[in-house]
Image 1: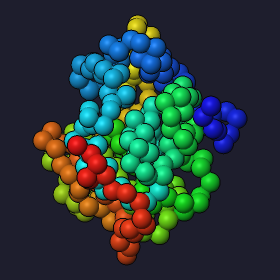
Image 2: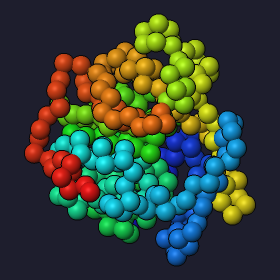
Image 3: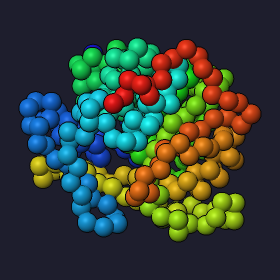
Length: 269
């Protein structure tokens, strides 16, 4: 049984059961033997996209390049935020890393626990008590989306600040859908509701369409500006060919602490 720290599961206000229901059913279906299960992702930009549910259950051999790059940078005790069904947490555990996995969907948190994630927690990262227990906060599968919208991003940074130990780091991925079309760093900021990376998503599975929810994709220049204003320093750790990137964020004036945790650069194939 996955542990909780509040009775109601702490559903995020913009991503509650009405939005995640199709995804939860797809995850349960895959675990039940439907290995060909596919989610359909609708957005207000472009055509619907198929999303194989197997991606959430990927093994060490099936990691995406950004996953490998992020795991190679892991240090110390890890907080896996938006952990899904725990695939990365399991790989970390197998490599001897202490990891706490947090996931807002109760169904996914239950699957994590059933798959063997030792510290699987159901709820929002915002509702974890500030502890400064963690050395790495891992936010993958478009970790920027955990903020929902650009104005909420500083709040996410503030939450992680209270959870990370001195010398802690955030590893966050996203995709620059502007592809360099945004303003140069420092020249302008986006007004609320105008940032082109703020999309609206809906998920569909077997004909069931979930409620809409915001999905944030952020470009590196805007992320750098917001992070700097929040007291964080950004390093681009990896960039893909289609705008994907991995950001490593550390507090201004701090360097990443080597607290004895195992980096996975040698273990990851």
